[in-house]
Image (cartoon, rainbow, N blue to C red; front, side, top):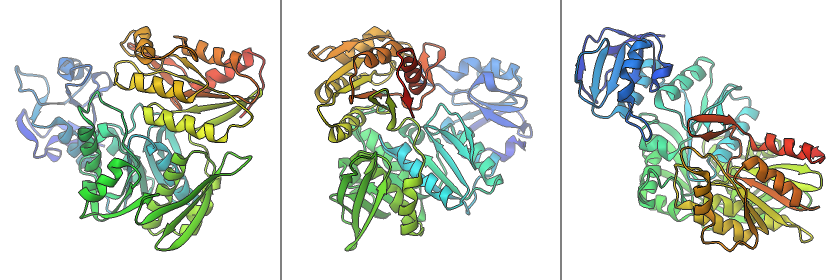
Length: 492
């Protein structure tokens, strides 16, 4: 696929140095990934400045350089100066891949926690109806059952539109997308029109890019301004910010859900004894509905309800939706449950204060016979440091024993990260083990029959980032390896 630069220019262009009839064959903001006749986006990012790598991109074959910085000296490539590089990236990518397909149904899910599970439920139910789907989210990219790894919840605009184009060519009709605050702030989804937007909740997270919770909320709110004229929104009425959406989006066809909701009212949630499932009873317009899901935790019931009613508002049969839930495969790294010897091990992505709180409370509700809860977690380096002591406090107060370890270290000292987590805590039910593998092995040593071992924070993530290194590390694999070393049997 290739197009002339002239076909890709938009209103954000300030000045073009060079001819606009050059060919463009693809895009990247990573100079190392540039190929012949690609367009290079020189972005000044959080860690690196792409403008410093323009010559590398040209050497690798870039025909066009895009930057917000004025051109200083002539280049062996066309130079496009823009007022907003993120918006230009989205607009040029959409034009290149021709993704403005009115037949495509796009569902966006946003919020701090629950995006992946809610989007997974929606996608798997649609697939059970033999509908071809595109899934874009934290656990990966899936295009009509072809699965790809991703480092992003919502990928950069040029990658996003390439994915959409591939799905359209394979006759996919529905896109289910997690929409992160990064995606909204940096315009990765700019120009897309959504058929449905779901808001799950808003809690402490991403303070490294949002100076306040209000800024974080206003960023999330943008998704609802991107709905089609006939689009629908769903919001969690039991969340402070979810309720605020009701007041902010008076021109949107909006459905609220939860115990305090007016439209989709939760009546009863109950753990099904002896299983890993729960039942959900809710009411719409005086009519009660019920269904079961194969996951514990009230928060997962809310995710399931949001998924079910999103599809119902899009005119899918409610009974068929409900019946599909118990056949949905587990979400990678979300309440993944294994029996390790006589220990119950759960791996979960809980990486925020609210997520960790809800995970431990969900397990506390179902434990029996004085079973202990042993929680292993850490916090990423070079990220929001304000959540570290909050997560430490939650873990210590709700768990019987806590092992604080590392997560992605990035460019920080791992011992400093751990000190930030534990500095104000009493150490009676707490220890620190810097190496995450050793922390998991230690937990297996101290856990007794019937105890719950919660390995939190990383979930599905396959790599641990240490400075510029990307080290293979999947919690599930490490758990199994350490269990085998300890002579414990494993039931998946």
